[in-house]
Length: 341
Ligand code: ADP
Ligand code: MG
Image (cartoon, rainbow, N blue to C red; front, top):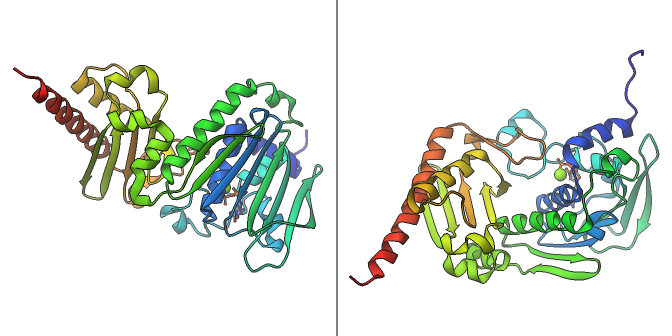
């Protein structure tokens, strides 16, 4: 075959393979965009586990009419302009791939009104070349993205969708994880028209109350709370004990600079700590927040951004492990002390 440039939709569909694994990954990308747009309230309407529809509405800064088309094209981002920006990135997105990828494998409409723009506009993107059509719409300040019929045009991918229930569970997990990283933002999640989760906004200094909203009051009451600092690293954690093994070991969340991570290094440090203090082979529920100088960590490792790379990985690992060990053993000590001789 002669060498040819891929048509835009096909190129985006190939990229979508990395970003859009399932409805929950769409939800993650959309919610992160809303957070990057400074939204304080995010509402999600899910139909049939996301198979049928994922609709998000936010009250963020919106997208100007003449940028709607750009927002939907590949490698278009308002978040970085130079390699230097990439090194101190604070926004959640930066690849400029999500909307282009999602719109290439679904029926997507984007409606937005920045404060100060008189009229809201809606963009739909169609056809093989992904041409964008614009029409005026009614919408308050902020953005709505409607993603319907995910993978309708990529049957091979569609086959991999699990049941509505399973896909919905993944979506709920994504929302819980993000809600734990942003207590100052209100989240409402509906499934098939019914409200399934509602997290009211609390102050950033009231992280504990968001932990309670998301992981349950029982977890919050039993969990060991700790906060430690070393150099430019801070760790804050709520650690479940052995009494919570069965009920809440699905509530395992770790964050690096506000991003939800399933980072191997962090999980390893946690496992080591739980093993050495409580002799538990698996970790019970935990919520761990790590804050570190952005220059010390590379987030540009994985397209779905689950993993990071620490410059001083050994040091970070040992710091986490020691902080958790100390917290677990001081609380184990406190419990021993209460047992009468
Ligand atoms: P990235 O987030 O990596 O920049 P995306 O494809 O997710 O790429 O989004 C492209 C651009 O569209 C963003 O850079 C941003 O300018 C704009 N955008 C997307 N979603 C929103 C939103 N909810 N509110 C405001 N702007 C948005
Ligand atoms: Mg994005």
